[in-house]
Amino acid sequence: MDLSGLDKSRLPRHVAVIMDGNGRWAKLRGKGRTEGHRRGTASVRAVVEMSRKLGIPYLSLYAFSTENWFRPQDEVSALMGMLEHYLVAEQPKMMRHGIRLKAIGNRRRLPPSVRRILAHVERLTRRNHGMTVLLALSYSGRDDIVSMVRQIARDVKEGKYSVAAIDERLIARRVATGAVPDPDLLIRTSGEMRVSNFFLWQIAYTELYVTPTLWPDFREPQYFQALLDFQRRQRRFGRTDEQLGNGNGADGLEADAG
Ligand code: IPE
Ligand code: IPE
Ligand code: MG
Image (tube, rainbow, N blue to C red; front, side, top):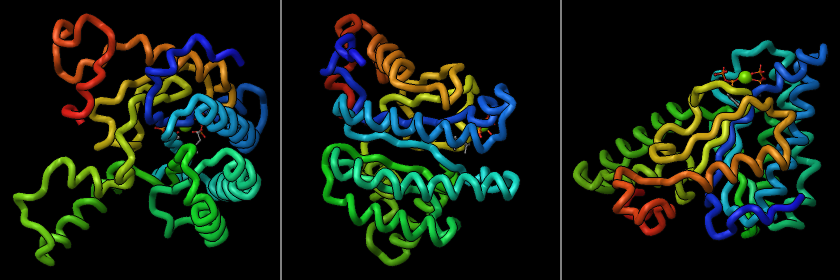
C-alpha cells in the first residue's frame, strides 16, 4: 500500500485501538460470533504490521475488557483459544520485526495456558526495540486506577514518599502504561461513541477517531484514513489557535501539557 500521503514527521507516537464490531460483522454474514473474532485477528496483524512499517513506536490494542468476562462461557473460551493461537503464531514475526509485546490488565484471571504463552512471548521479545505492542487483556481503566491508588497508598504507608509528592508524573508511572507516553490517537471501530472502560487516565488529551467500519473490515486503507484524519487535527492542549501559529500542530507543547 502507498503510504506516501502521510507526513512521516507528524505520525502519532502512540496509537490505541478499541477493536469493536466482530460480532456484528459475523451476524451480518449469518455466521457465528467466533468467525467474526477470527477475522478480527487478521485486522490485528494488518494494524501491527502497518504501524511497524510506519515507525509508530507504541500501539495499544484493547482485546478483552474486564466486562467481557460476563459474555457467554463458550465465547470467552473461543476468544482465549484464539489469543493463545495468535501469540504462538506471531512470535517469529515479532522477532523478525523487532516488536516487543507487553500485556496489561489482570492476568491472574486469564487461563493458565494463556498466561504461560504471554509470559513466554514477553520474555522472548523484551529486548526488541522496533515497536512496543501493549495488549490489553482483562483490562479496565478503572481497575488500572484502583491498582495505582492501592500502590501509592502502600508506598506512602511504608514511608517511600509523602502525600505531597504525589503528582501527575508519579501517577502516570503507576498506571499500567508506565513509561509509555499517552496515546496521541484513539481509534474505535464499529461506530460506538464510548470509551468502554479502556484507558481513562491516559486519554486526557488524546485525539479520538470513531469509524463505523467493523473491526474485521478495518485494514490498511482504513488505518491510513484514520492517520490522515489525525494529521489534519490541530492539537491545542488548551491554548489558542494564535499561540500555536495557526494550525501547524502543537509540537513543543506536548511536553508541558503531558
Ligand atoms: C470486539 O467485538 C471484540 C471483543 C470485545 C472481545 P465484539 O465481540 O464486541 O463485537 P460486537 O460489538 O458484538 O459487534
Ligand atoms: C470494548 O468492546 C472492549 C473491547 C474491544 C475489548 P465491547 O463490545 O465490550 O464494548 P461495549 O460493551 O459495546 O461498550
Ligand atoms: Mg462490542
